[in-house]
Image (cartoon, rainbow, N blue to C red; front, top):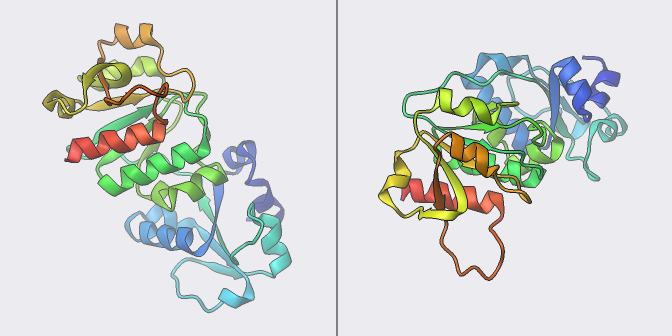
Length: 239
């Protein structure tokens, strides 16, 4: 890819147009390389390094660039000297026993990255993003995921209305509902979490017969952060 095109990848419209996104840092590149060993599609990725890293081991095509060029393709103030251009991929097909986490209009990139990291930790989950959610290939999302973006299947622009056709049993996290400690909480195929400020559209959730569950608390604050809600819920599913 031309260097001028790489610089454009920090903007969503160019990521979509060029079919690639950019990652930065040794840890993320290592996670990419591990994922490329399992998914041949990622072998089309290309690594860019400064001279300090030109002898780093790796099997993906590597290009040496100077520090000035690295700074131009980096979003961080202090580039580590290692970056990669990665193709955008369709999510892999569902696996046996896999459950799904659906995020409705989640906006904060740190929240989404943290959620992906949690899904990767527990394993055998996929992430479904509604329209109007933060872009999963946003640099802040990718960095917050700590490489989990390469290990969790992510589907984008999934309308809430299609869930009943895909999942026989749907649960939602809400302030009003049965406690997640209930044995029934483990019986669902898809778990729906709402926007940071607005939560979930109650009328639509009612129409799809989603069963509401809640994380019991003292109620001294209005609600839990959505990433914290997902973290606690997934722990409960595996407890």
